[in-house]
Image (cartoon, rainbow, N blue to C red; front, side, top):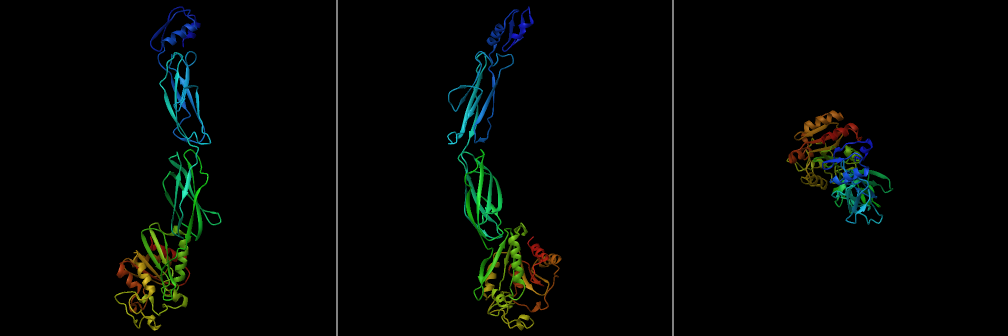
Length: 453
């Protein structure tokens, strides 16, 4: 206002640009005179800003503060009719520069609140009402979980959801897996998730046993659940029975990884060789080191195709059939060639192609479809390759495990073998690994894994 100008002792009329045009104040005018002139000439309402409100959810009281300013040269926000007022959720207008939206513990204040506000300047100009929203949520979210199960070394889907009456999402969602002793074995951060929707995260267990997982979440207002939803997880052995031997011993296989390139490793075709020991060690490594399986691969391991021969420490099965002569190839024969060492042991190729229960189990398993097969034998110390791409694979393996690529001296006399059957039936390579020992070295492990890449 211009009242202060009177103190300067002006003796002539003063022209000053004001709210709606020019005003004239005569010399000798008092402060009240000047105020009256300014108020009468002010027709523009003030402007009020609100702070403290935002677009977030809150779990405690929120105070909104109003600050009113009048236009330059206006009548101001003191004296006269000047005031600031607010209206909460359609109630009565209340004078004041702050409005507190409470958050009662009984949740009665939960929801979205509308705060209208406006100001009036000294001249009585009323600002059009404006509004802000305040969201209050004092209820904690709830989390749910579903029982899960799977095999060691394979990804298990853990399924959960977050529910909340008001918040549209749960933040900082986490899944915690504990063993039977209550010790944490895995923490999985799931991040922000929409409420009311089932989600899944994957866990790769490295040990068989009973586990329990819990789901914790915080809603958008910062409320944490009172009790975490939880469910049991049962991790079984990775070994599954795919058939039985002549004497009803189980033939088991394990699967590691979930990629599209499927590789099969077969141990124990001959019961008195190193294949079973190495296949067992390889499976144990994959179970405890799931990340070793290439991302695009799935590796299946048959621990021992010939459990009767393994128990009896014989090359053949319990019916004296060499299983690696029993495959239904074009050259199969029941009575083996004299140049075949199995013939000198009095073994046969079976009563008919694929006659043995062990062979039947393998033939059924092969129907799943594989990109390559590795058959573990001993003790020649070579890599015998067959089928398209077999030579290239064997060369890559040889560079890692120091076993040379080669063929057995009696190769021409072998009939009904897996090396002949796999390429002819499926058009894929097979590497017969002739081991030198029962120790599964790091070099051999790298060589086997390279086939899966």
